Length: 181
Length: 78
Length: 274
Image (cartoon, rainbow over all chains, first blue to last red):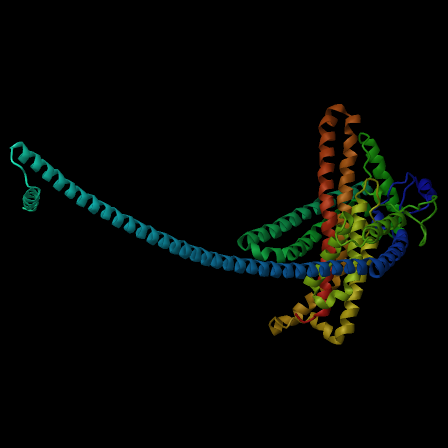
């Protein structure tokens, strides 16, 4: 067994390549590990501090800047939108007032027209009514005349039928007196 | 024969050393449990204290690791 | 440390254990073999500058980091691709951690902390690939990382505050008679920091991988004894899956914890007076 162990190159590895004790405590490997660890750490440190970290910091700062810019732009746009909305509202209110005015004006105009037409119609109606009355009065007068004529004639005929020669003048006077009475 | 007794002692010692890990488990459970009960009472303050919890876990776990290390030393290095 | 005098004994003991394992029903338990450092080319001894599997996996880590953080962000897109957003997420995550835990004046140390985090997290995840070598499971590696942090923090504390840095041990909030005792405890805990800092990471990684290996050794049970194997083999495969899921979590959490503790230590050095 002793001869076997002497063949191996390390005190920490047995003849089968297995570990003897804890490999972590094998002092002959420590120098190697420490050397390569220091090399690795130095390499990583220089990669990080020279290339990687400044680059990531720059990218992050750039993104932060972009975000800030975008936010500012968004703020501007928002202000513009608010402005536009105000203008729109104002225009709307103006239009509404104007429409109100137009409506009032139109209403007044229509009313005036209507009044005029009504007055004209009233006047026409009054004229027609007066004319009609006149005609009616005429007709009535005519009718009275006719009645007088008819009454005279009838009376004359009646008188004649009775065999009396009728005096036209006295008949007329009698008829007129009767009609009046 | 004498070597066997030494080896037996080493193995028994390694087994006994492993009981220390139970203590570490209790400790870690205690830390996390108390953190959780505190965090549920005041969730807004929990976020800032997570790092502290991990430090506490690390300290109590380290002792368990030490006992594990003693066990390994007894198994492989004595 | 396995010293030379112990070497013979452990070798004999290890061979014995292997023998016992091969006698015991044919299951082979070698949970620690995955941590062996081997030369990448040939079978020579491992010297200081030998290209080993450590080199290979660390190089892979570097390549993965370049792939994510350099190639992934090479388009500098304002609207990021998936890889770029992962890179940005990692950047923002660590930067926020440094800022929140260590304070704004710790930001100059951000690349250093980012280096530690990104190295550990990539080593941990690459180590989870089947057949991989986990560099962070070696105490030599994590001890160097932890000592780097410890030395940086200590030297920087003295450099910035002079002897005033010793105020970190002198807790002025405590009653005066207690202060020397507390100072002693603080000094001890200060020097234990790198130890726990390194062993926590290495131990976690080692433990998970070793446990997976142990369960993996149970998996071929069905080829030895069908009766027992029908029960043991599916159980062990389920257990491997479960532990692997846990290890994915642990791989990240340990990197996170290592980094956040670095930030905490850094805060102590920047503001030594509590």
